[in-house]
Length: 479
Ligand SMILES: C[S@@+](CC[C@H](N)C(=O)[O-])C[C@H]1O[C@@H](n2cnc3c(N)ncnc32)[C@H](O)[C@@H]1O
Image (cartoon, rainbow, N blue to C red; front, side, top):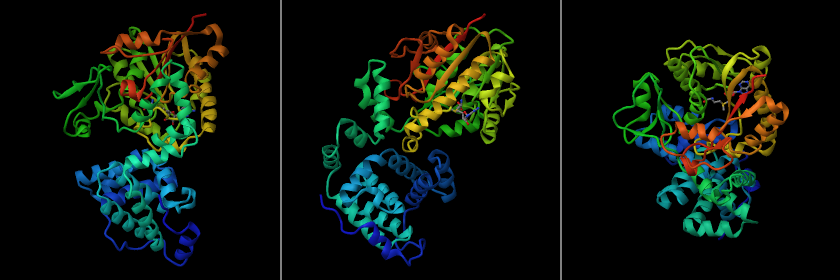
């Protein structure tokens, strides 16, 4: 596999006096331009693709077909970025950190079209060369042309074999082929291993790279599912729709039908349906933003005669919680407090508390593909400290006899079982672990394939088609 000539310093020299932007000489298809803009924003300013992409699609006035193409290009490229970087490095004969970042974005986008989409080679190369010009680099466009032509000279299978053959060890091979950082591969393996299911690792990595279905919820007691609903396998109020526009249903029902992952639904229902609701119970959602679970808790509270308080530290996210709660005819105060002090300020006030803790998000890589490149093991250490402080606060805010659900959208053991084990050490007999698996099985439509000790539950994208939500129900013992 031959590398095209040229290196980063020469590309830079050629471009030294050239303006960084200017009209492209090749007309670039708007869907590709939108995808490139989003990739750049994700790289340069830590933008969230799932928030930015719809705005950019609307601003560019893309047709439905072009919007679909822009979505596939953006998400597909972000998901497989780690793999494409290995291919690009081989084809370019240099490591990707020696390629100008704007050109690397163009190359990743081109690699995705050549290796994972059925885009004809000449179209992928020509459009990419046009994009390279659009980012302001004439010598860069020659470089892009050379690298992508080299990639196009071999089949996707040949590239997989080549990348696998160059891997340093098995973790590095999985990391490369499935486009996950090595530390994430190891964390996921440890997590599956803790359930005696380490042999599922490749299925999980594959599932992380598969676009999830759009899953919906009909808020219980407030709205019926539509006639064409296909019931979720596990969550009673959850469903998907075969064709049509799921987002249209959300609008038509004024938000009483919402988009929500089935795992998130199960996590909230584990708390609300673990035992019958006594009228007058007080519930708290300690970390509520953006409010998906708060809306479900509110509907369940309304049906059972309970009340709910939602809390969210970040004001903009607290506004999203208010918006999510608007369709539910229940007065829900939204506090904007640091959750770590809520327990001290409101001791023993609540019968049920949901702590859906801030986490690495390694359980939602299907929907937020860029998260895997943003997090590092250092984030895990910082987050577990915050998760433990929030858990202590939640325990303080819970009435004796009250029920707590500790939830993360991450399967990392430090954020899941580790946080629970540490809390049990700190609080001793005060905390009584509950049969969380039984609680979920008894509310689920179909029996879930769960592993582990039953006190905690780990859901998985490959096994349950949900985000990898972790759920632990704990009771605060009465003195
Ligand atoms: C995993 S998200 C919650 C998702 C939410 N339950 C839902 O279903 O939409 C965690 C939230 O905790 C918030 N958060 C982070 N630190 C916090 C703190 N110290 N106190 C309260 N909320 C916090 C974050 O801003 C984020 O909105």
